[in-house]
Length: 634
Image 1 (tube, rainbow, N blue to C red):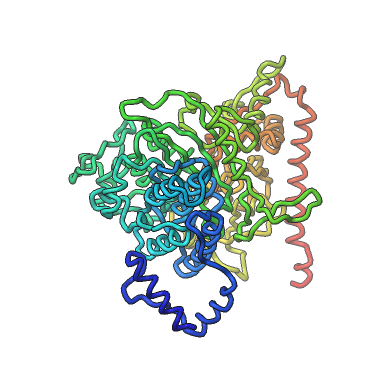
Image 2: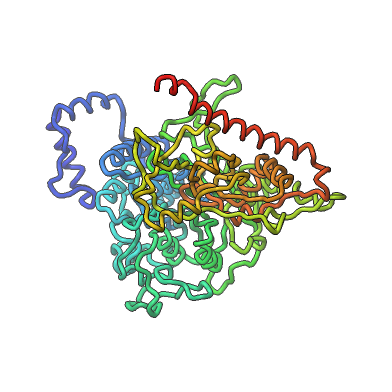
């Protein structure tokens, strides 16, 4: 049997020399081959060309196998298939549309786009009819992929074969290189200015130097490969320009995802659409504002979808989003104002370990359906696209381009109806008698809001010390937020440089400081007790709020510990891997203020009660450490 299978494979491989190498053989041994054949012999892997369901099943099975195998062998990860399907559905490619993935990987987007187009071709036509054959032919010849890895191109070609296509559009090349250096099939069939749909998940740098693009011959081809001028404008580069057109502004390195964003917009046919997965930080980080301004000047933002943090887990914890863009027709200006579809995916059908999470029925029992909301998001967007309106929810809503703030914030969370409803409720205090609304930073001229310096403490850390008498205790943000000091690091300050000593001095807090977590899970609040201030060095991951007035401090602590303040902080959080807040965000938080503290005496009393309880807990913890059971043994 093994000999027969190998012979059949050689015959098949000869039909597709662009997929299989000359003299390529099946690598597994005969016994394994026979065992596999015995398991699969009851299943048919041959279907009619227009049998979409069977082809979809085989293609999906192959993609799942290659996903697991490649991830195990090479540490690679691929786009969540729920995201792929939602993106294809939202872009809605037509039968004759040229669809391109310039960072194609193993072909997930290419095969999904082909399946989508094929179903359109089959709908409304009879099996074997000339009309259906003509439509299927258009589908086969209009899906393109460029991928730098030869092995992944081979896998993509095989995936397309198993999906029912001839795979001719799957090519090897570097999409960031000159267009003229790409595979001849691309330069002749999908050159610059011809793709109708570009759909891709480009490689991210994650701000790691080794993952950045550092080739000057590539960087010089991109405006984003250069420093912007003082007004934030990037130079315009042409593909035929072999010089540094930025006149000495060439960068040493750049994040590849930014270069891919620029290339996709340049490559796209005017009047057509892009869907691209990007780090979430591109939407709102201040460091990306020039890139957002450039993008908004060249494209209409159709939709922004932030993806759940588990979307690419367990492979990577990078927070991601999907941008859907339209390129205007030549000589047409980008609209100054329009409505942008916004969505926040909160369920992605798996947990942080990659295990599936299934929806529950009305009895609380697990069903066979994944617990995800991307399907509903795609449906809501299609309704919005077709009729200009839809039923908004906490997950899906809209924002107006003309109302973007000075930071050009595109993060859907910033426009969340739920969070903005909180802001509106706070703002209404301005209309109430004996009340006003100000920002925390303007509550008192003596208020101080800051964070400690960024520094390296690695050389000071003492691991598992047996004697801490001469060591300095240090608390991470989580350690400081604990009611008991269970997570303590120890520094040997005798090793410290003058700079490290100064950093430690600046990291110490004062009794009465309000401390707010600014990284990871933002907005957690604690209070600097006397022992915390006197004894410990505190991480810079906590924003310090120092309020001299006792009543104001108690009121502000009560406010910052409220769900109202948490919602307001969420409006401003940002980040790609972890969520972050800066002191300026705390400074700018709106807070209702009474004309007299007597109006809010119950709130102030509650705040003072919390402060007293924290002081007592801190004293009790210290007493237990000094006089607890360990003292009996010692």
